[in-house]
Length: 328
Figure 1 (spheres, rainbow, N blue to C red):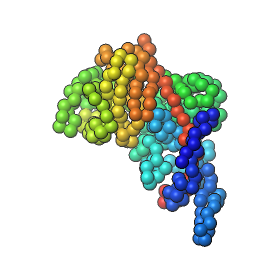
Figure 2: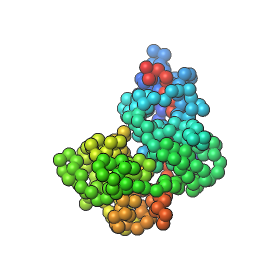
Figure 3: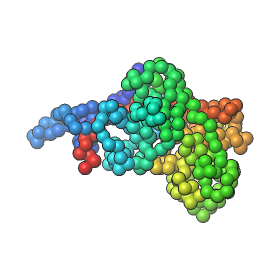
Figure 4: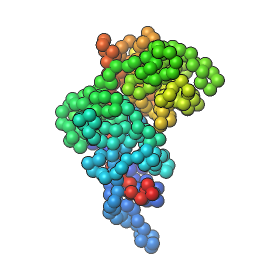
C-alpha cells in the first residue's frame, strides 16, 4: 500500500511489506533494518557499513544516485549491474555517480543497468539536476552539468525542482560520428536487415547512438523482439539504441524504446530527442514535437541553429541503503 505526498513529491510505502525482501538481501533503507528476536516480535535496528543512495525516476526511467561525497565505494560495472537487477537487487535502469569533477567542472558519470558507462542520458541529466538542487549543491535555476559527452546546460522550471529544460546540443547523422560501418555518409532512411527482415532506418547521434524506425504501429512486444538484434547488429560497432516510432500528426510522435545496456525502458530523453530530430529531418513534423512513450510525454524543441531542447518532469522515489556485504 502506498500514499502520495503531493506537496513534497514523495511516495511512502508500507514498510513491513516491502522490507520482507530487503531484509533477506541485507539492503538498508534509511539506515534501518527489520529484525526478529526469534519469538515472533519484530523491530528495527540501525546499520553501519552501507552505501547510501537516492532513487529518482523520469517518466518511469529510474536511476539510483550515488554521491561520492557521502560514500566510500569503488563503483565498478559488476556492482552497478547487481544493484540495478530487478528482483535480485534494488532495481533501476541505471546509476548516476556524482557530483564528480570532469574536465575541471561539476559532472556525473552515467552507468547503464548492465554496468557499462554511457556518455549521456537525457532522463539521467534531468534526474541528476534535481538531485543537485535537492541537496543544495546548486541554488541557481540555470547551471551546467559535465558529462562524458560534454557540458549540458540545464534550466529548472519550477520551485519544486520537478520540471527541467535541457539543451542537449546538436544531432549528427554522419556515419563516422554515430558510428555506423561503411562509407562516410548521412544515414537517413537507409535499408538495414535485422533478424532476416528489411527495415528503413535513420541513424544519428545526440551524444549516444540511435536507430529510428518508423512503423504504422508501435508496441512493447515489437520493441522487445527487435531491440536486441538492432543493439548488437554488425553495422553498429558501439552497439545501438532503438526507437520504433509512429507519427500521430506534425506535432506528436509515439515511440517504444530499447536501450543498449538496459533493454526495454518506459522512457528515454535522448531517444525522444533522436526520434524528434529524425522525424524533423524527414519532413514529418514541425520543430516542436511532443514525444509520447509509455512513461509519459517529453517535449522536444529544435532551434534554427539545430540545438535540441528537451523539457520533461522527474520525481523522487526513495532514500535507500545497501549493505556492503550485498556485493560479496
